[in-house]
Length: 233
Length: 233
Image (cartoon, rainbow over all chains, first blue to last red; front, top):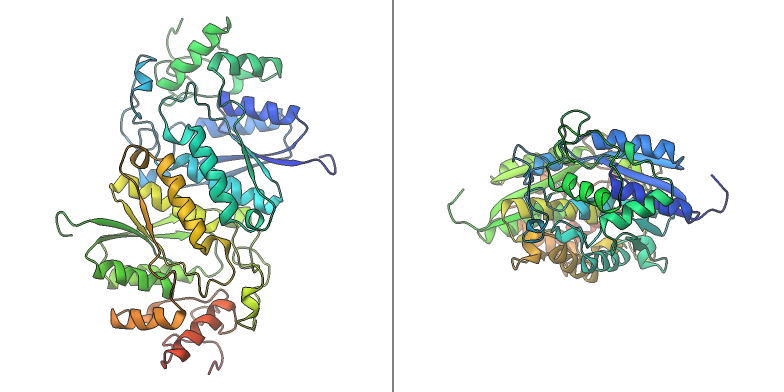
């Protein structure tokens, strides 16, 4: 760690987007404090990948917290509701899918906020984006703005003149643009994990997350370096 | 459970305030879904008391979730920072005390929101109050209003025309008024726990929470039925 370096808290899921965000934050000279969650997700492998990425990118700190979102339920990511496969990319824009986890980003951001307050960090980064956002209400710009306002009323730091700032540097980028940016910043996408429904280490290639990711690599003229269960080309 | 009864989610800490809120919600005819947290608090006994209260009040459901707020730290309630004793009640209004847990109410409410969404409940109740609020920023009316706005942007239900409503029925009441209301509603305060720094089952009588509670009972002309470590009269 470099003394006097500005601290940032980064939500790191182990996926393509948040790994790119971490590379962006690092390139801006912040001291990186990464936060991941074991929240009862089926794709628990993403937490292991987050740890690998945090180590590779030499972050100042990586904290993994537990949450019981599987006890609350209500999502295909935390219960035995089936993860949809082979949906058309246009179809994803129509309605909020069953992979939506009620309150997840709100709960994640609340913890990031708490940790930022303890660290005396003002900047919180997350990898949501509004272009390929797959219909999730907690990935929209107006939600983000509203969370920031709430955070600055409900915390000691925020309410005493040291406001928090939420940053979503991928918000207006397509998956293709995110991948191109990450490649320029040296992200090793082979260690990231995006799939909602993996078989061990293998991504399914058919869930919304895989399809958006694969399309992004295709549009960028690149081959996705992760291993898939079947043929995805 | 009565078919067709309106569901409510209630944050139940096992303390005097939230137990009174539960009695209020029950008296209004809601189906009561209570939520408590093992968040790494020293006063873990409050969770046991919450379970007793939930059973006594015959709630529809009581869910206890884990949180790692002690890993995040930053509070006298979750770390070895000493809980202040013998503070003057006026002193409590001066600044945010070390018993403030960064982000706690935001994190609690986020989980209540997630559960309400899964239950298809619209009403969330919590026991904060602005009179004896002990200086916490996450107990203020403007915070509450802001959380509600954020919640209705960041959830499926809220963003599709089924908004959530936060209720803080104790917001404008003094501790004395809360106790008087609870007594009328039949709350058994002997099973509640408010102390920040208990010795086993015994309340310390000297932390902010005990002092506010004791003053409330004194002003109501009643004896607090819980057991204290020393002489508190």
